[in-house]
Length: 396
Length: 185
Image (tube, rainbow over all chains, first blue to last red; front, side, top):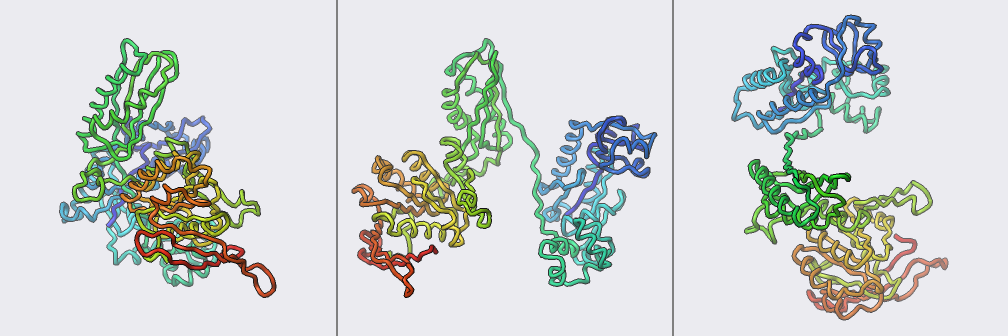
């Protein structure tokens, strides 16, 4: 089962967290009233006066002269989004960000042992979210992302809506076709045929629907039956591992730099080890005194954790670096983090127990010999009579 | 014909013969067929690979990596890395003019290929050097046999004689006659 947690737009929550007195007042986020911009989101009080997303701020002010207008605080919005996701990530790692802001999906299947009573679980989720963003979310539970989102849209803060799999079709039947992701042509066509609710749509057979509207519209038909084939793509909390050291006095040769790089590699390694991570890329930034900084990226074939391995990769690149001015600071940042357990000693596995992926192998070759070394071909048979137009070569 | 039901896995197979006798046609068909089951690579030194021709055999072009190296060293490094990464079949199209130093590269290359269970095909114009002949587990020699004409006088295709002149996995000496139809396929 999939649980959809719907909260107001993160920008709105950020504004409420910053100034709790704004709750209960018409609030429009997107910019100040005189600015030439559009409404990003608005509070329920402002919506009641006719303000909708995408409307110009000028028009919004005419609809609601007493509304409070605020610009989007990007940093605070990002913090709200992160805290909402990380709160839900504590319940299950199967958390996915929805297409709409403030919409998050959770897969509940693996929580049955920990939370045998689903209502207690939903209450705990609601409490945890409320503790973080000071807003009680609406919750819908169903067999797919699409149905759970509709359930959450129609739930109240106090009572979540749970749609059992066998009742999905009957549950959707009552809603208008507007809840489906229809393009304008298809919506108009369905309305002309008098198909205004999902229930009426469900009475048509799949082959008949396909004959009438084409294979592309079958996705909409499947959604109308509650069959959502989209995969839940898990969100991973961002981890930033970066170590930096000022060089005082500034260093102007790469030999001396190696000692500091080794010490930083040990610190990065300790951070990786503490979190059970490995890195497949280290970005080195060398800040020069009177010249632009130098950026070097070192890629590894598989996730590295230990200081020795990291330094073995860094050292030759540092020695080759062309330094124009004395260096003031060196920064090492671990990128492309993965679980360190991917790498295993190959006692029972053929060869060295590790097989580099083809994409990584290609990336490594391209880094070493240039991007034109490994290519892929695309053939467009109906493009043009000239061969050069029909065959498109792209770096792999 | 090969006695083992296809190209040997983890070994080098050599397609030798003069120009225009079907070596590249057979290799590109093999690449197309292998792309249906897994990733394949074509190391194209002379830049003669025709993706349209490969595509005629319903090849998965998204699984075909075309390596266009500037030197033998680049090409051999690519083969080693790709074989290790899990590419199932690698075809090297090596003109004679670019083959200087291949005898030193082949031992390392074949070690990697054997380790990775990768099938390696080498297209080599003209008579192969002793080193390549030594390291190849199978050598297919191609020779033009005859032109084939239709009753109305139009050209139908080219008959090619293919002979297994060396085979470490089955008795050598088998031969067959292949028809390369025109236009291809």
